[in-house]
Amino acid sequence: MSIGRQKKIILGIDPGLADTGYGIISEEKGKITLLTCGSIKTPARVPLTKRLEIIARELKKIIKDYQPDRAGIEQLFFCNNAKTAIAVGQARGVALLIIGQYKIPLFEYTPLQVKQAVTGYGQADKKQIQQMVKLILNLETVPKPDDAADAVAIAICALNNSINRHLV
Image 1 (tube, rainbow, N blue to C red):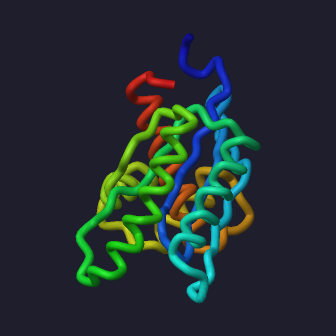
Image 2: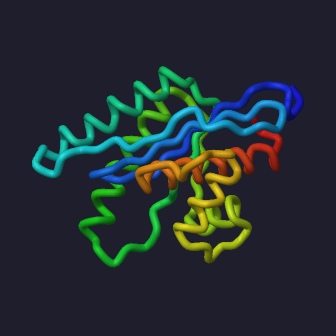
């Protein structure tokens, strides 16, 4: 199959226990479109196992609805707060499991790689990334909440990676 002929659907995930951002983009003949984005929210008062079940259930719905060809997820980065890192790791693990169950090719990206793919600058701040996401997708406003915008940026990174590697 040649690049640009087939519609590609890419899932981006920004993992978190309280908020897991997701973004789905499509690319067909060079046109990139935002299909959906949002955040899977889990209440702090709910037991951990239930919170992880919510993330799993919602990711399954998103995958069933959009049937992505590939997924991108943010790698864990060094965090000063071990409790936060563990919580993010647990949510990330659930996302990895669900993606694996659906046999979706998965690619992991560091925050630096995402920044470079979206803005061309590895030290870009959150606002710069959000504005580039808006520009790349020709949107009227920046996707909200922030984790959704981050997930869309991860999806754009995964798309750029697939085009450069001719993988999708």
